[in-house]
Length: 111
Length: 115
Image (cartoon, rainbow over all chains, first blue to last red; front, side, top):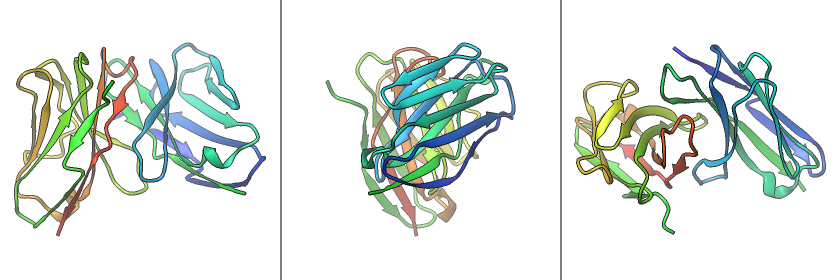
């Protein structure tokens, strides 16, 4: 079945440093979604990427979808303590009709 | 407007007991998903409803797990003969359209502990 792998599992950064998490799928995806889960909270939708090579920005967050639609990345510029949480990618392939989540990257931002 | 709600927020039960977990989706959302999330892991798909019918139940781990959505709104996840390995946070999500291409809105989850 479809597998989505995410690295790193944990990342500690000093406030102001950049952060990147990477997502790789075993199969070609129709789209990929990114979610953020704060400690003790539930996943909150951030963005969806659909097109090959697509790049989207949300303030300090930059999301990329690979040319082959099998990988994606999330980059945060100049992290802030409010960025703390676990970031999940979730891939959708039309044949499966379900989202497959990665295991997440837990981000800690040290003040 | 109200988001997705789930009850109870916490459920502690003994091994072998039966439990029901409830999900109230956002009004008007036709798609409803159940996920299970273990500590340190991403949500694991269980079942997807489109309206009243289960469009995909391939994620249910075994026949002790069953879910219904009789009127196309509220859904109940039912677990029979609970086992300690069933302990996890059970998340429900809903979306206006098909969840794979539409934004999924997650509820706060039910933390199930099986002693």
